[in-house]
Amino acid sequence: MNAAGEVPGHLGEDTLLPLWGALHERLSSGRSVRSVTVKGLDAASQEAVADLLGLPSYPGPAVRVRLDRLEEALAPSGADVRSVVEAVVGPIGDRAAHRERVADERERLWSWLSRHPVVVAQPALSHWVDRVRADGVPGGGPEVFRVRLEHALRVVAALPAEDGRPLPALAAEVVGDPHALDGGSPLAHLVLKALAALRDLPVPGNAHDRRALWGAFGVDCDVHSSSVLTLGLRPEGDGPLAVTLRVWADAGRAAVVTLDQLSVDRSSTDAHPPWSAPVVHVVENPSVLAVAQRGLGSACPPLVCTAGWPSGAAVALLRSLSRSGAELRYHGDFDGEGLRIAAHVMAGTGARPWRMGVGDYLAAAAGTAAAPHPGRVTAAPWDPGLADALSSRGVAVHEERVAEILVADLRALSAEGAEGAIRSR
Image (cartoon, rainbow, N blue to C red; front, side):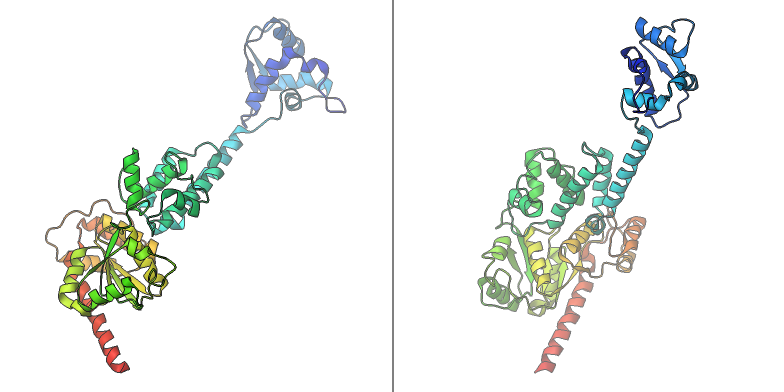
């Protein structure tokens, strides 16, 4: 190399490009290189290689060149192999280091995803994480994919939708792009995979199934058919919803509240009535609410029933109650789906577990002679030992079996309220 760092003219001739190209490929591997095999040499290139290395004859179309021998040949010109290769071909990379960096970036991505608060709050999403990881990082690399995953988890955290809003409205509000969740988009595919994992369903493969899954989470759903069952709710105010609920509560009867009733004119006080209850109990099964109605009637404290997976109306009501200061206490089935529903309700509404610990399960299961298998069990974030106990016992305890225990709690709360009312007179 001369003082300006330029390659002597004969080293940059086209006839030597096959040699420098082969060396560039090998040196960019990031591994130790002692020799390189150069193939496809024509007569002119064979002559140039022979002259450079001082060979007594042409080497033939393929030649193995030792780097120490090549360094000796370059020494009189003040050059070395790496400097010549970079000057003629370009910078030498390090594919091994690059692969290691990419692998580290991907591991950091998967670690971040598995520890994301939305995934931790709803462990059923761990199966979605496994699916996403199996599919691999798409084009654009880990950082670009991380942004898409973050958007997907924001959408999941916002569901069920409280007002049956259209998909473009949800996308605009959560992601900032009304077309981000259009059918076939990568983000929509990620979200639908997550929603399917939450409900332990296959990923929808056609437009009809996709619409149905979105609808199950309150998106583009019928605000009149989306409803929630209540008992003992007595909101303040003189709006039609508040008055109606008080009438049915005083009569000791259950009331069905639709999403339309909850979302009508959000600017009015009736859209978010001032719920006066400090504690609201929530159950999964209507049969438990029926037991409470028969046993307590108009004395039943506020009780809400999700009827399985909560509808948009159920989530809207529970979030409204929580915003008003009510403490939500949730109970559901002790089986795989019951744990997933419980995690979903708690994550989406801030509810706390009500007799949903491992001790409650074992006590209920102890008196069970025969019961169905709990199915696929996922973790219960509120009690780490519950999922293991459920899996090891292999026995589901449906909420109806402990209905009397739950109603006893409600009866005690009702008695406390009655005593407090007498003392305050």
